[in-house]
Image 1 (cartoon, rainbow, N blue to C red):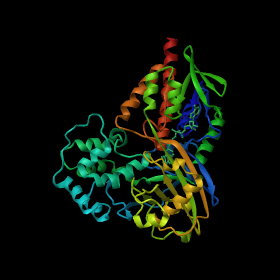
Image 2: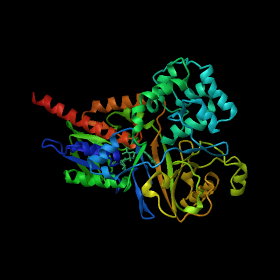
Image 3: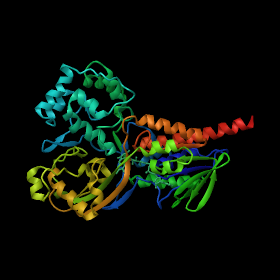
Image 4: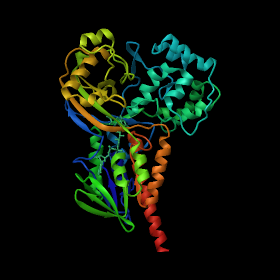
Length: 489
Ligand SMILES: Cc1cc2nc3c(=O)[nH]c(=O)nc-3n(C[C@H](O)[C@H](O)[C@H](O)COP(=O)(O)OP(=O)(O)OC[C@H]3O[C@@H](n4cnc5c(N)ncnc54)[C@H](O)[C@@H]3O)c2cc1C
């Protein structure tokens, strides 16, 4: 028997793989028990009913360039429920107003000068600094050193403004973190390669990007018509049909040995298994591993998380202007509310916006485009900004509505609103993240029959989590069957 600890998308994908994945259970396959501490499956994946539609309040989409999540949806029979993103483009709040994000960015880093110059996002000085990368490129003097921090690396080549107004909101936005100490090797390996070339960073990135151009015919993002809760429900249903034992309200708080087997203590009960996939996030994983490998546990504890909140609104359609562009708006970290607006709203001078991003759900997803209603979500919170954590839901909604009057020219009150909080939700991939992960994985492998998986290791997005869960499941099966084979000979 193999246990999966944690029933987020990573643990569910691991259990799916353990029960045979695309092909289904094999006669000699392991029996599977999934232990989830809370009373519901899905972890960060959560949908609510709003205006008669399932609306996601955790992730609302996944990347189309990676196949793992769409493949899982198809394997569980939800292929027809996949919805491609309906529009492209987005804006950024810069120099006091919304401005369309220019074309030619590679993960937020400019690869072309003119579109950025025309966008008005950078000042004249910032644009000239960007131009210097073409005219007098600054060679990289440090070498790759295995990893580099994205912010300083790009700043040296393209200037600080390009980092603060483009790279930080676009790359940092994915993790609700900043790029000042974000790992290039983990988040943007092409940047490390490009930075080593003697020529312009923009030109090098443009060349590297062209190599992946064949993937551009995929929709950029997908969602599910019934929300991501429908994927969780379907996985739970199909796992049940396959004989997996899915148990809720079972927090695993200890992992002990019984010879070569593992004894998990969950909610006062013991489960003895041959192998374990730990898919919980790093804090619980560290607690489970501490008595077996304190060093691995200590390394896991160095991975910190950002807490965020998502406020989802149903506005009357006439409360928002018609000229909102693309799928949403990004607000660079630390941008102060303009002085006049701050005074009118009763905010302290220089107070930064709390909203980090707005998603125009009606424009992004055809199934959320409702007559007379504008569904909109606002994200708040990131590493280095925890103001939302000490606010009540009412205060948070009030503040976000105030900010939307400035950011989106919203006028009027919403008809409905849902606040969803995710504490310690998004792992921060700091410089040398991959080294930390490799050493933890090596330590865990030495324990025998154990693997770790999840958002904290090889990517926070849903496709990466699915891959991580399935990969960990295959590793444990391969290892256990290898041990069984060796014992037989
Ligand atoms: C607000 C928000 C928006 C996001 N937007 C996107 C997006 O648009 N696209 C995208 O691709 N990704 C997005 N992400 C990231 C993505 O949703 C997550 O990285 C992913 O869902 C994490 O899945 P997981 O299974 O690894 O972890 P989790 O979802 O955290 O699941 C871990 C599970 O383990 C359980 N657990 C913990 N401890 C124990 C224990 N001791 N015993 C048993 N069970 C335990 C928890 O209860 C939980 O259910 C977003 C995340 C957030 C928070």
